[in-house]
Amino acid sequence: MVASDSTPAPWATAALVLSDGSVFWGYGLGVKGCTVGEICFNTAMTGYQEILTDPSYAGQIITFTFPHIGNVGANAEDIESTVPAARGLVLRADVTQPSNFRASQHLDRWLSAGNLMGIAGIDTRRLTRLIRDEGFQSAAITHGAIDLDEARASIAAFPGLEGMDLAKDVTCRQTYTWDQTLWRLGKGYGERGEARHKVVAVDYGIKHNILRHLAERGCDVTVVPASASTDDILRHEPDGIFLSNGPGDPAATGVYAVPVIQDLIETGKPVFGICLGHQMLALALGAKTVKMFNGHRGANHPIKNLETGAVEITSQNHGFVVDKESLPDGVACTHVSLFDGTLAGLKMTDKPVFSVQYHPEASPGPQDSRYLFDRFVDAMETAS
Image (tube, rainbow, N blue to C red):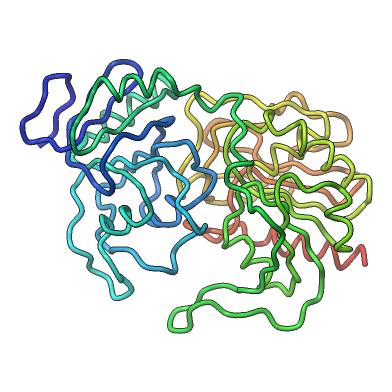
């Protein structure tokens, strides 16, 4: 059954309420109560665990356009952070029993263990069209004792992601090291051998698979909190600095992050940024960022590499973008989205500093852009 009006559905155990007044009735998943966030949609056909544990989704409720979410169950390996960051999820079909040799539990139980709430039985095509045509808006899921008044009050109190600094909420609280490498079938995750380069990764909401790619390439990785000062970073004597992905408005982090990034650029050391790190690098270079109408989220987004002419299919998750027209002299656009022409990569023309808007770590998603990690390592090789 699918319903999308304010008339209570007797069979429903949950409701999705939007800030425009729409009410979608469905079946509740995970914990009971009420959760609120900015609603978005993701077009990936796989990787729902990775998506739900991506810290970049903090403050958001994710609508999955693929109809069979949860059917392969959940496991302890396919996660990108210790604690799920998303506010909730919206599904078309109810979750069936797991059918995968790697599954260790039902998605519903995994959601409850991670304190996540969801709703199934929703007309996700209609909802996706609404988001696509009307742009971002706030939403709430109420599950269990359905309380539409509480949901509407939560929406009214939610400030929205524009102007919101969420990196400070999802960053690590203390410095740590990382040596786990990429997962392989039948072997699981590996462990880094002898290190060739020291990398400091600034955690604005970093995904584990980014760290695995760095370790896979022989990097001795030290992860520092988003609030780390220039001295905090440089005392580790890094050969290169990585600026991570993360959630929220990049402009809201300008007080503490942008000045540090400017200092790091001046050292001449290689700097590589992804997603939020890309956006904050752009701000540090003098460019501007803007909120998108409804963002890019999925594992099937085409990107053109302007330097090679190659088209890469990429994994993306962002609601803000760097204004291509605001790039200053000495900064070049290297990649663009073939969906809407927005800037998807940049580099400094006189320093080993570059970044991309999308996710080359492919978790989930294709592996077309993994060469960017090799480029970062090559830059450290050249600089040493």
